[in-house]
Image (spheres, rainbow, N blue to C red):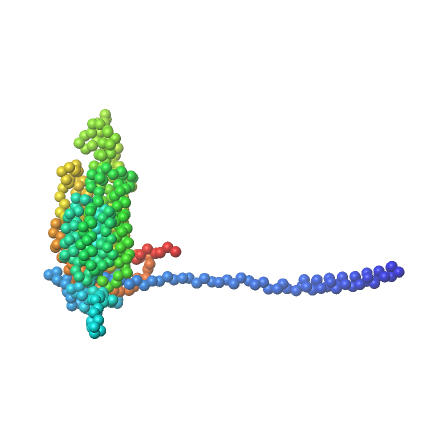
Length: 436
């Protein structure tokens, strides 16, 4: 019985096995299902473009130096890097008032029985904007009375009713007056002014590194960074004359190199020096000849002038972007020789004075202003600033140069009349690209 019962089972197994093998063979011959290939997305190139609005304050004068108030938009030609630009906006400000557009609306009478205080129109764009910048970190304490007297003249001669101004100091005077029309705030600030600049004796005694007197560089950095921040705020003010009144004694990163070198030699008490501060050696030559050049004129300190020029250039570029004009004033007035207790050579002293005054002239000249330097007649210079900030034209255009790599653009303004002298800033600079 057993063999008979097992046979059908074996037969069924042999019948099922070929069927499974056939199914496996058929399924193996079927093509695999299509796999989803990743979609290749082509990234389109991104073209960055920008439109820059440039605003200029232009002052045309005739042969006699008088302002010309009857020019029209078609009389001006603006060139940027030699390419003529299309003027988009034109405004005339004469006597401190804008005459090309209606600025002030007619006053309305108050309701009967109601007394309202006088208010300034909400859209008042009359008057000028002044930044009175007191760099007391570079004004010596002995010059404080002259600085206060100068600020009093500025209050009486330059700042008029309707002018918006602010007062800022860089040092221990701690003056910070936000934008206001109240001239009394300026009078109060004058009492706080006290110079804290380094005297020549302080410079000689100050420690120096390979980059020069570090205290001098720190003070210059504080002054320039403060002015730079103020210029960033001025960029928000449009269609108004912006004047930066800059009171300082100027800058020099590496002054009195000969005297500082002699001071270092005396500090190490090397005996028997000659008149030039050198030590005679047994060979007949001097230690100065043996040691070579003055160490304060070599190494990193040799680039002190280049560093100063670089920082001055960036400050003036920020002023040109804000359409602000620097008017620098040296309260020292007409500078003679050193004091009787200061043992400096004439050449060394004149080099120090020239470098410090030239730094102030550079700031003013590159922004369309001028420097009141080497002069005791401040009233004449203040009257000229008052005239330049009262009568002018405002021209605006959109730059046709889309190249963001060309930061510095040269500007030239011409007038289609003969014998006209045009005063304006000579260039403007694109800001640095913001980091992402």
